[in-house]
Image (tube, rainbow, N blue to C red):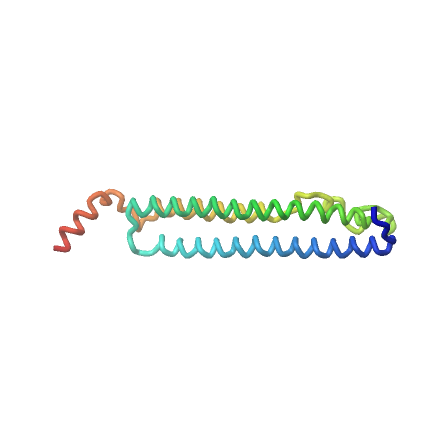
Length: 168
């Protein structure tokens, strides 16, 4: 075991804690920025779906599959960031415990610096990001199949034949 003075230990813990806080903010920012980008992409798809151009059955199916795959990949990416976020949060809690941030009367009379609810790993914003992404995907898929402009499924099978015959 390395012999380090108490003041140096505190300084090391403070430095580690600052690094962990920065990493936590970066993970939060990365996940939020990615979600914003995906939601913007969803709005672009919504514009295409709600345009006056008909979308035929095969296009609806392909577009729905694409949205579903994009949903899976997005959730996978966010789950991976969330894993890192939770691991990082665990390290932060250990460092905050070492510095006595949760101890009553350690720094403040009859109080602690952080409330007990901060002493959990589950303090996260990822649930709301998943809700935004999933609701957007479901809305897009529902609109693909229920948009009145695109209610041409009855004619989809004959579209190619009629278009070819009409173009001659």
